[in-house]
Image (cartoon, rainbow, N blue to C red; front, side):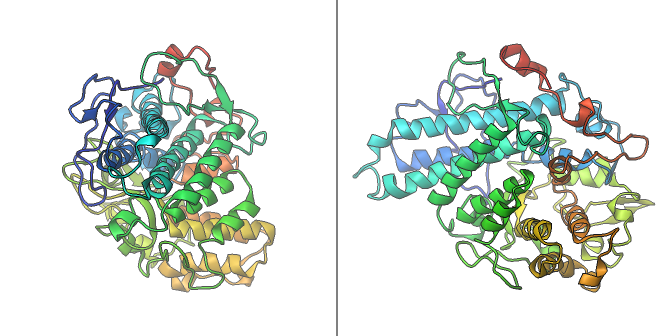
Length: 490
């Protein structure tokens, strides 16, 4: 389903992402929102264009999309969390695998929020192309057309790539199923400001990934090396953001050689592993420090911020979910002996309330929950590289060192040696386990299950879901099928 505006929305209230924002999101069919400009003047000054870029991030960090719910759904589908409230508004049907095409709070809302963001991005990119002749002195700096404009377009295209990648993980078959030949998503690349062009068939999974990579490659080539401050380097895209996201995308496609190529751009050959160009990414000495406000360590590559005035919204907040709606499953990763009782990720983030464990300190700000919604961290890049190298050579020394860099930070006594692995527990198993521990509550579990075409494990009274089962992926929303007659259901 397309959503559109007759006028171009600008982020007048979101001018300083990462420093404090006030949401400008209103009904996307409102014909004349207060913070809008006619397209004829929206690109007349650098300030107006900058405000539009800020607004793109505002759409992406919607609470029903990457501001909270996407990450929650990515974790609760699997077996590391137990539902406490049986509330359909807060993901019970996701946890139970009982979603339908009419499930409003998850299937419909996440799809609509993602495509709303995509359309805003497309409108912005179209406007930049149509108005490029204006980007000259004296109204614009001399290098605006050759530098700043391309950087803004790089940010927009990175966000579009992230939106499409995120949608693929729920609404399409994994790339591993048929090498991307299965049906993916309607690939909308032009801004829509009217009721035309609703009908668009689904491109294949491979075609959507091809577009994602084209956007990320453009972003890498045109984004600035740094956004200038820790606040902006963790909330606005820069060159290393594009490279980091490409390691995730290639991992999801099983293109391990490409994961290595990309990761090597921002990971030094030996420990301590750091990015030697652009933003100086590195693991924080303390995992707790990564999530302590203001969450601006060099480990955070991209996260979406919130403030009391621009909170994720009721029942969207990560801290809310993991402190009350979903407890940790004692029979999930919490119960694995290799997740040691002394591990800092347990002692820093897990609290037992009565007899029930909760991940209630990973997002510690409390109501109204202004923790950044995580998108990607340097720890993930290291583990992406470790896995890619290990799949090429199970005895790879750097793969072991990368794994131990992440594990040893929080569990120094639990680092692995070559002798740690056997016929029943390989280094690949260790890396996948470490991902579950390290990114618990950050939404990556579903991505890992999907890319490996693995069963979704059962939990409590909920049975496992096999890759051949109809509910392995989400249905296309009924709202999309109502307006887009060219689309077919999963």
